[in-house]
Image 1 (tube, one colour):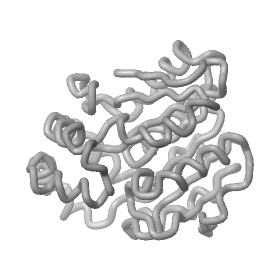
Image 2: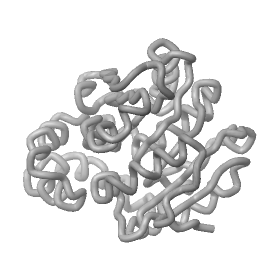
Image 3: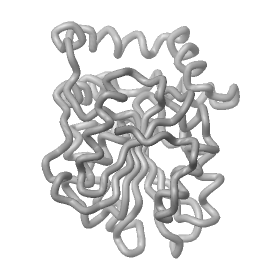
Length: 256
């Protein structure tokens, strides 16, 4: 997998895991704001970005690879982990399988419960994978994520070369996803957050994170799925507060 690092390796490490259809560039604003104080590590997940030719096998396999990257590339062999959407689910598998590599975790835009109406959605996966590469759909998604114009060529490139097989394998797992059992036995601090305008499935699944030993759930106001680019300053402030174990920004709303 393609790995990039920013900042001094002697600083506390944060690993950033991107969403589907994009790659590590989605964290540009967070990296620029945080790399003076933290050792920031980005990874293009299999089938995405500069790792588009790397086969996505499973969440478990990807989590094992990430654990190896942390072990080999980060002094001390552990990191705070931040993941959005696909990256959030992958982060949870990483914590469940390799807790010794994780200091704390933030996941955004993930659900803790299986998808309803799977009989309807499963047959549509091939269609979704195909139309996600259409220029009008790419442009619409970019507007929804509030991407700046200078990012569009990179986003378009990533969307068109993203692995359709990866997307199908990912959703085969996510349709049935529940929080991995080992998480209920771990003391790691886990923050789950979602935009208050996200899909109900994501928002309704947040309270389950409050049942983890050190889990907590929050909503971001006036925010959608890709709110790291919609409200980058708030997202960055949340990361900084969480990894330094300080109070979260007052704008975030506790979700019981």
